[in-house]
Length: 280
Image 1 (cartoon, rainbow, N blue to C red):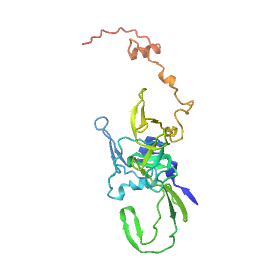
Image 2: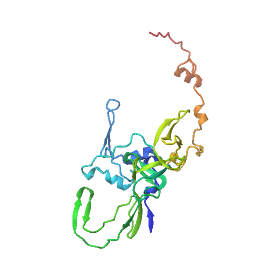
Image 3: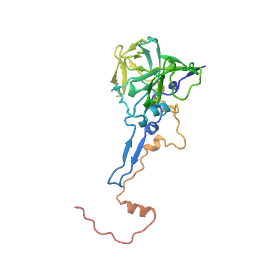
Image 4: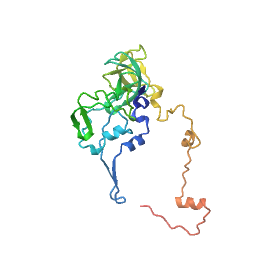
């Protein structure tokens, strides 16, 4: 049986609501302050977050960032200042066994400069073939609860999303490092190219091929939300506020105070005379 890893079923971390991602990443406590004198103080036990190839809401990512694991190594990858790859882009692989093949970007992790291409750069993993065999322990990592056995369990890897049964072949996509291991495809000639960001006459920031000067548009899937809805195809429901209602001006300035306006709306008549007001 061949089963695809969950990495194929999620786009980048921003495919999910940002508030949800931040909530699942939070592991700490909040110390309440004293009214408006001392503000609330938030202490994060797993700050900064160490990014892996697994989404933050999975069990593997939570274990990797568990503060009880002891000393945590810092993230050694420096994210790119300008990100050029988005979901649905057609790219060509420049290294490895799939060099020269083209595919669509299905996921990316900006913090690691990692890009996943659908159906390419795959690794087949046999799980459970050494079940029942005995061997000698050669090393262990106490902080990770990991034990190494000589000559056994050579190809076993943990797959995000759950435990794989014995004698199962899993297909796992390996990430490609941008921008060195993949290149965007120029729509003019279908060949890999380098790009730069430029402004159009309308003021829109777009990607332009440095070889042909053609604009490389973003695929329609790049703006999909976690429920696979797009802004252009979304239809407002009864609980949504339509755009015309938001733009409608309802405020009418009046030369009376708020108290006088409330009295007028409720039919309250003030019989007392107001004293003089001096403005210095």
